[in-house]
Image (cartoon, rainbow, N blue to C red; front, top):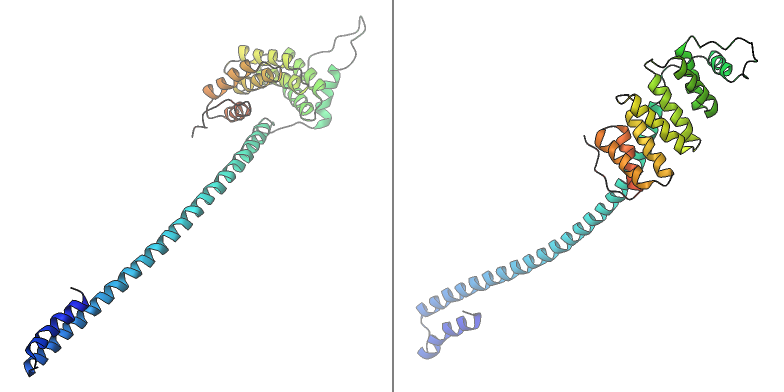
Length: 265
């Protein structure tokens, strides 16, 4: 019932009676009080509806702002993740190279003696032949030092002499691998592949097996034998999934546009 109808209903009996008694006035007052109460209630309800509407509108605005902020955050996070992945790849490559460095390197003066003797001119007929180097560790570390300094021809001679003189030592497979690395650094990729194959065939359980497979794949790609290189790199990921070599293989495969799995934990 609206306010106007309530008032008409209250005044109609009085207009018909033509006079107002004390009891009528009291009744009228009671009706007016009830009307006022209802009016106040309606006002409160109306005010509450407006407040609810305002709150809903404010909530929608805040929700839109939150959604926009979340979208911006996701975009920033995606960019940051890409940067972190690139830096992680560089770090892993650096760690891999550093892991190849031997913990002990003999003094430079002593190291060079053995290898320089290997580079001496061939002996004249009748002259005594050059005897084998008596210290395999010195020869190996000397050759490795030459490799690190970029003296690849000298390192090749040293590692080859090591294999000739000490073919059955624990470092023979390493020496063979570093010969392949010397060829790779000189961009002699075919020779490097042949040397990596020697490591894989003669020492299939060597600690250089994963590295030899990895660098063989690199060399095949460099020679334009992409499909062979991809298969070789995929083999590294499959056979050594948690190794540094597998991470490097994944990076090279991704650079070639080949999908690969993530690193296992």
